[in-house]
Image (cartoon, rainbow, N blue to C red):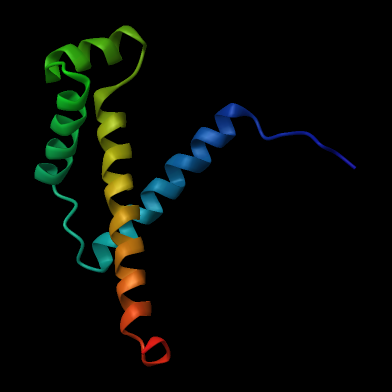
Length: 98
C-alpha cells in the first residue's frame, strides 16, 4: 500500500486541465468569459491591493509568474462561479424544490 502523494508538477497539470474543462463547459452553456470579464476581474484585484496593473504585473514577473497564466486562472474562476450559479438556479427552479 502506497501513500505516495502526486508530485507538485502533476497537481499543477491536473489543476490546469480542470480549469480548461470548466472553461469549455461554461462556454458551451453560453457563459461570457470574454477578455473584458477577465480584465475587469484583474483590475478589481489590483484595486483591492491598491496597486496599478503594471505594478502587479511587475510583481508577478519578479516572482517568476506569468500574467497570462493568472488571467487563465481568473477566467477559470469566473467559469466555476458561473457554473455554480447556473446549477443553483436550475435546482431552485426545479419542480422538486417548489
